[in-house]
Length: 187
Image (cartoon, rainbow, N blue to C red; front, side, top):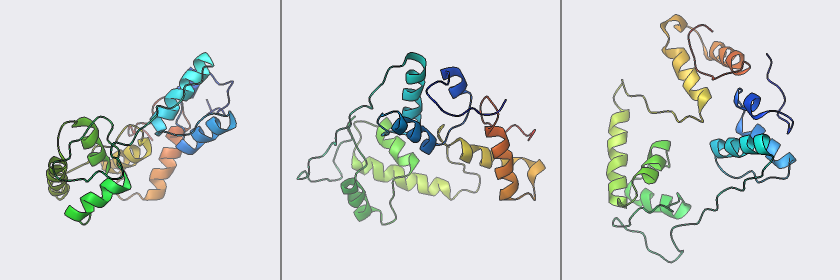
């Protein structure tokens, strides 16, 4: 079965059976007069509801946590409304020159409400040390199926000596099929 086009006539079941790029999801939303904001998973969830019920779900409003005049410090507490803004990035760059918002640190903010910016710095330093271990593999979030597939492809001893082009061909094949896009070694 070939991947069908993403149209408003597609069933939710068929939609969820295939892999879609975020830009494809955004294009569908835009073409149907809907908001394209949010993560890939959030947009996919809203499309699923739209295809199943015909109901338009608006993205959740996000409020910034800090007022422009609030001073950030090591004792600043992470709240449920925390956002990774340019102001927050600038603060952390003062303490960690190579700081950036990695998936790990964004998840740390989300999962550690009540902790402080000092705790964030300590978590960052620990993660950087872990990354230096040759056996370390960072967790790949569910919306990054391509990255997980490529990692698993190259971890398979059968693919030793194969190149990126081979992995991409295997990915293109698996994503054209219904079902999940996990590497299974049969490709």
